[in-house]
Amino acid sequence: MSTVTASSRKEHRITATSLAARKRRGQPITMLTAYDFTFARIFDAAEIDLLLVGDSLGNVVQGVDTTLPVTMDEVVYHTRMVVRGTHRALVVADMPFGSYQVSAEDGVRNAIRLVKEGGAAAVKLEGGTKVAHTIEAIVNAEIPVMGHVGLTPQAVNRMGGFRVQGRGEEGRLRVLDDARAVQEAGAFAVVLEGIPADLAKEVTAELMIPTIGIGAGVDCDGQVLVMHDLLGLNDWSPSFAKQYANMGAIASTAARAFADEVTHRKFPDAEHSYK
Image 1 (tube, rainbow, N blue to C red):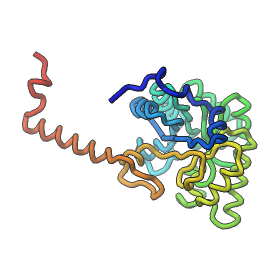
Image 2: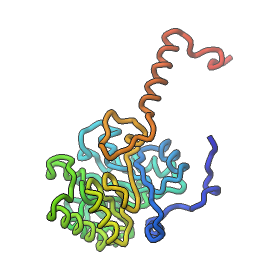
Image 3: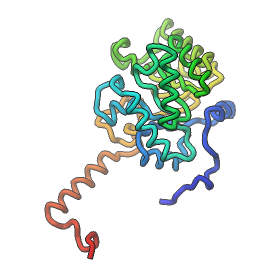
Image 4: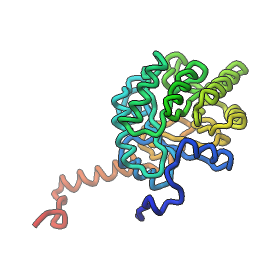
């Protein structure tokens, strides 16, 4: 496989400010989650625009049912690894549950940690009108913020599960108000998750900042997937997620072949032994 070097790429490091120009040009934005150096390096070489160190690590890395137990220390740790693997992509770190809900001051303090200790170029937090003042405070601390409205996993208990949001007139207005509040607070982009496609199209047309969709239809300015869904590493994936490879099956086949060769003393052979 050929190696893509920083000097050979067509575009330098993606920045929060450069994404607005992407929206104006109608150039779709790509975003994947990443949690370690190896996959960050692979996705960066593939010219994925943004890498999200998602609190989804609770589900796909730690094996818990929700994102709620994920801590700041854990997000800082994973962010540090992802940043080391990138030269081009903009690295966004999720602010985990409890890191910004109590006060705007807490939000600023924890966002600073993700930048200073983790090396993130931006942070993401969930919510709209209720967290607008926190978004504004973090932006005023010179840290770019990505918003997240619609289905917000950290509110799973209040929502009664992972349910599509924005249905019905009241639900549509709530999502629109949240998206507007995020933009007015100074966010450079907003994730639209789990909302009807026509609503996502309306939000995208109204906002000046880019929208990144996940389960929100094709008309968003960009799309994001959890890498484990993309690569077929999960036992189950949501209906909106497309599997582009079945690496789970490949890994299982390789492990079985290794076990078989060890059992029958075929590995290591002379080629894989020192003389």
